[in-house]
Length: 159
Image 1 (cartoon, rainbow, N blue to C red):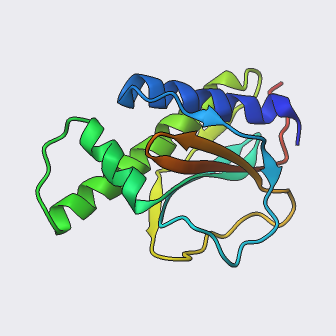
Image 2 (cartoon, rainbow, N blue to C red):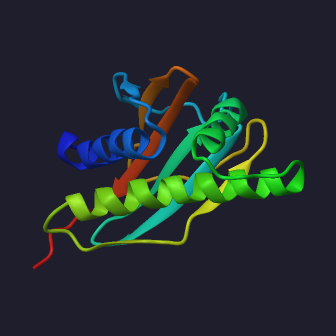
């Protein structure tokens, strides 16, 4: 997958964290994800892309980092189920913003984004397209790491 397709997701993620949370995440070297059986992420926000690109985008975080981000957002939250609901909504909105901004930055392509959904739990799984690699973009913050995974197939310019 070309860097030109990945860079909008990378830039969108960095801008989002700076603007929304006043956190400047450091990006590490992107890599091809090859092992889907085990991982350290406890919560993932997922979006499906359609149109001239078909694919999946996910932001994957630890529970600790998602809790810190919710705290930094300034939202008032309760405990228990209320906090869980707000965490899920926030993670869903993060992937929504990342995907939407990246799709806009992919000039010349007609990319539509789905409604986000959130998957939680230790070693949860996401179904990835089998016709394209999954690129992991790892980030590091003072509150811990997170990653954005991107898999795009059939990227066809708009006519």
